[in-house]
Image 1 (cartoon, rainbow, N blue to C red):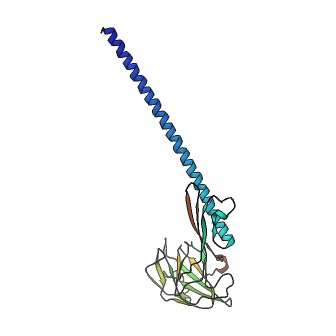
Image 2 (tube, rainbow, N blue to C red; image 1 turned 60 degrees about the vertical axis):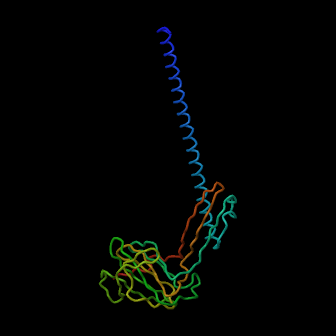
Image 3 (cartoon, one colour; image 1 turned 30 degrees about the vertical axis):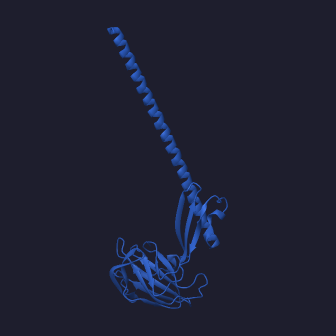
Length: 255
């Protein structure tokens, strides 16, 4: 083979190699673009299914609150393709924990059946609370069945000068309902013929824990709503709706 023939074949081989490399690169780019397109489409569909499931869950909660009973998601308008249920729980307990209450907020705790107030809870109750950024104090207001008021102060850090209404406290670590508390009443309160116990938070945020000698009246409605789409995407939401809360402005006291 002459030198010219060898060089010619070598050049053809190089050209062929370059063509193969270009084809491989083009194929890789095409496959990558196709994969990204498929992935983005799948993510978009998944997000759409998530939104549909969430909307069905919310519709179930709304229907359960309105009808005051558990409902099947599939029985609701335009949701026949979904499965699931919005269930109202009515289990009573001798423990109850409020959400985090800010300074000067209050919580209305029901000691009689709502809304009739014909059956009154009676027994021993203790109140727990915790520190967040500073030491809180509590104002306790009992509204009796004759609409008279009884007031007490819980002030573990001696931030209120008026001692006439003060209840004793003990400090430590007290836990229930997955919450740790720093303080509790030294002695249980004896409750009888009381409609409401209103706890107002002073000086610092806190959660309030109530623990009784027997099960308390219901404090509101707990709804657990679950919905599943035909594609298999499932959402679950739990909501607690308390009975009406009395605004703090109704019971403001200066000490």
